[in-house]
Length: 335
Image (cartoon, rainbow, N blue to C red; front, side, top):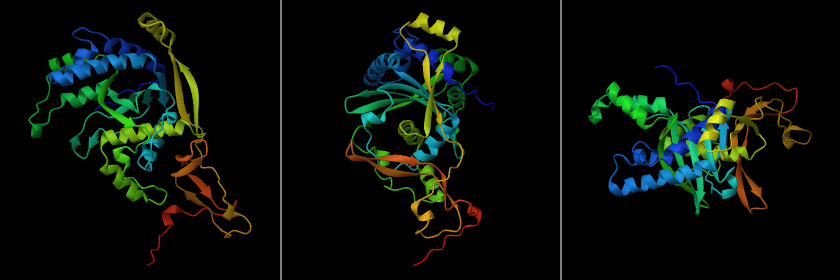
């Protein structure tokens, strides 16, 4: 199967403008009716209202695009995220649309198709929490929709049916799910997370990753992306939409901004971080070793509470000492 082209940061303003326009279109093929199609009357009414609400939110949303290295860190660090209560100040903006350069969930789980991978999120702060919608690429979503499941009694869609769905969902991203993350409370998927993940082995982390579902993985990646944006290891630059896109956006709504906050990692190397035990008076280590990335609870006096910060992978030990080969290290368990 050919790989779907990656959406770029400069495409995001036009995607936002067209989505907002579609979600407020009251016609038969507009967003409200499309989101409501196939549901019972009560759920359909909620989806119509949700489409209109998200159209308003999208117009005031700040646009974010996370680079591939930032995305990979958000996914891996997300599965190690300790139990944490989200606060409004953790969010980079009250309303936002974020695209990751790479998917934050897999397409397949073993041999079973579990849906298109999630590549974006919209959010809006309301009441005591933040409402979110996850998004997938249209082409990957169409591929997953077109392929039936004999065990579930679902047949493959015909080319005509695929064309009809493409007309109903005409834009590069398609909504996959909705959820709400409360402020001041630990989300359900974090309630059982360990307070300290620095001692967890890679095997334990891999097992934890496999036990989580796609929506949890995406929400973990989102929360971590927000947290990383507030740390010095992330940098931002402004990316503008192409001139032709800017003209198209102005015709849709001249009040919409066309700038995207492009977020990437500031450090790509493994820096030396010497600790107090490395010098004189310490334990006198004769080797250096690599400390894998982990979360650490940092106390913030202004909030009178702790907030997790990501400690990136780094080297410990005295300068000039040989580095221990992690492939040759053996852990000895003592009773």
